[in-house]
Image (cartoon, rainbow, N blue to C red):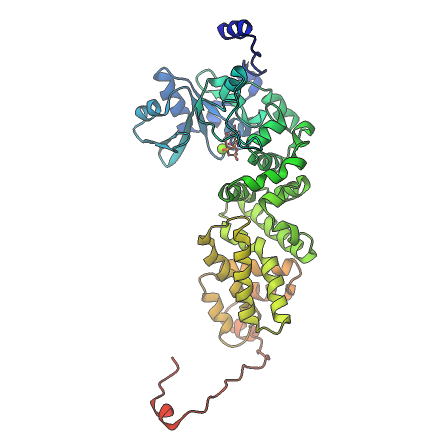
Length: 452
Ligand code: ATP
Ligand code: MG
């Protein structure tokens, strides 16, 4: 009220819509308290007892409205980081640029964030420039604000919902509940400005569309095609985190197609460009993403290293075969190809080096599945990476890169008893590599020890 009066006197623009929330009672939003995580409830309660506000916010409220089980719970409050930390014995402040507090509760961590503003409103009111780079990217979001500011700085309407456990109410500033019902991803504010402020929001739009099976509102979608190149200004590590979230969302296949449809894969998974144009590559990636989605649906762990190993395999295979055709020996050719592909992608996606070991092992074991005579299949079975490498072989068989029979042979070889295994062995007809004997001087021959 006072603010509006001051604005009027000073001839300033009024605040944008959304500065007051629609408050929905339980009968309207349908979230039941027992669907909420005990720790999140306890955190909000402790904040309220100390005289602060405490709301469950963001993805958790959205997911509960849609009937999904939330992955994690975030809490927003008007308490400052230091005040939050004092209220919870097991808590710590993290982040330097913008501090958030991790409250530990049993084995869980609740992320508690003080209401903040992206500075946009203040700058509009004061006719000042916000700190942005030349493309409009916000360089700081380091300003505390009130709850309405906090809602306005969030990305999509469905992500700006606050659940108040004390009153069992949902505060909805931008029509997020209606958008959940309409299954639409809609940007808060002017889409172009908001995408320029943080281009990663384009990837988030694609990720949420895939994860929730929502469509992107046409006005929100419109600027994406033009702004997609701005992703090249984003630190590679942040893009990698976003890629990982998409790939491990349980909807990776849909997500990757969504990225392609929006032209966003150049910024996030540039490797998709070449892979998806080659039919075997496309079949392989589809099989790999489907298998990952299934694992996540079944609550089984999915290894990022394995997944990136799969995404890069079509390139490794292409290079490997090209080097072989140029009369390089098979094994060294594969190792050359692995290193080349890993080096080339570092500039693009920043796959952490700690994944290299597993990716290389799984790739390097692939030719060994062809060897089905003598002791070699038994030795392969004993290899610590056998399981991952075998799963990988099945993807190759599914995509038509190797014979289905080869995958089936290995499935059966693991299942049957010793006698049957013996019968299954296929004599290796490939010519044995001839040992080139060096002519030795009599002295050398005498001092030779065993080859081991
Ligand atoms: P998920 O289910 O993937 O965790 P989420 O919506 O909880 O989805 P988070 O990345 O955990 O996503 O972020 C929590 C909340 O913070 C979001 O719901 C949104 O309100 C806000 N947020 C996160 N990233 C951004 C961003 N780049 N721009 C604006 N708001 C953001
Ligand atoms: Mg979240």
